[in-house]
Image (cartoon, rainbow, N blue to C red; front, side, top):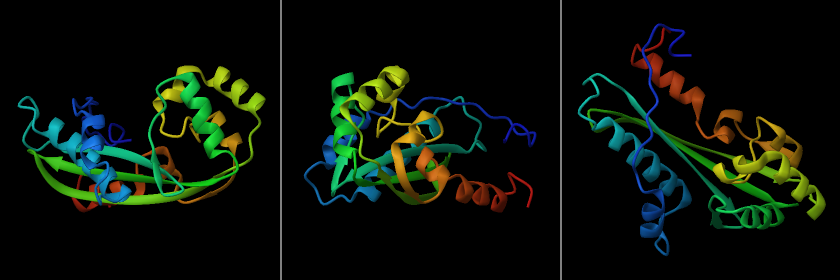
Length: 186
């Protein structure tokens, strides 16, 4: 999208240790919304501080937290854990909190937090196994073991919230920020 507008864009992974940040905040009064923003900020700040980036570069960091019955559910680390996650989500509602931060020269310019509520339909063990076999390792790369934009849509009976927030990036507020910064035309 930005490249279509004639803007140079590149993707860089941050070297932020997400698990260490989460562990630091476990057992504290840090709200899931705040933790999502802390992670997004850490990623954007780390990449924004790279010496090879031009001073005018805008760096976007994003993260997402899943909350089920008041508790954070992190990415599954194995197929067995993915099966357990889907069993726990089955027939229940959960909240996805997506945070985005934009940094320039290691300093924050803007941030936004949004959330969506998703209700998963009841899933049988057989369905979960077939679904995870079809999805493969992709299930381990997403916080809820699903991608709504792909076959994960079939897991849900109701979705409330912005589609892009569910995908992990509150895109519409980000685009508005870009327009205020004259990065995108108004």
